[in-house]
Length: 266
Image (cartoon, rainbow, N blue to C red; front, top):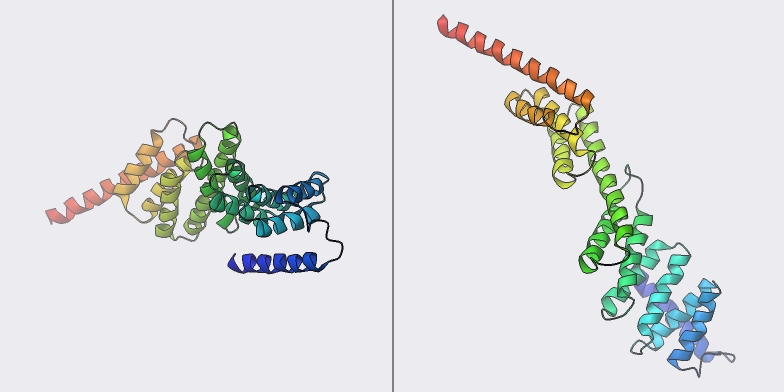
């Protein structure tokens, strides 16, 4: 990110040098407000590359002016409209951090949610951007609980949580199928505690109990499976499997108890 900002700064300085030395620099004698309006004409015509160039110049030439935050926001919008969500997110972050009192902060924070959600890949891939999206969502909802955009953000929030829960759930399943039951339990626990309201929480409880059964930790397995069996919205097929395992545990414990009594009587 630092290299990107340095490169961006070098590019803008180069543009400034060219514009100052050019014979036909139409913005040379413009005020900051006039230059901004000039850039907006390109933006409104969807000439985003040219608009991006002009907004970049404004942010450097007039960093202390009353149009600096406007230019910074619309610079981010240029990247957003071109679907360059990584660059857009970086520029929206700059609006929030450099101009905390700007009227564009709320819009920028909403756009950050959209950018990171767009960058979030399928559940099987690295979820770096998904976690960034989750952080952006939580920041937005904390700061703007009454926003008219709240419903949209909450919808994205639910999709993000479901994706992350599925990521953990599928990781647990892989370890379980490899008979790495202790590792599987760790991931099932994460689903149960971090994503307790997701559709993956209930089956995670069953499979956690199953893993303890396979580890022959029957007391823990029984406790977990009985709680799972008492849940209202449980999967009925898994509930039947839970009852079978509980019956098997009961028979094993009776057998172990009988063996112990037999050994004591000798």
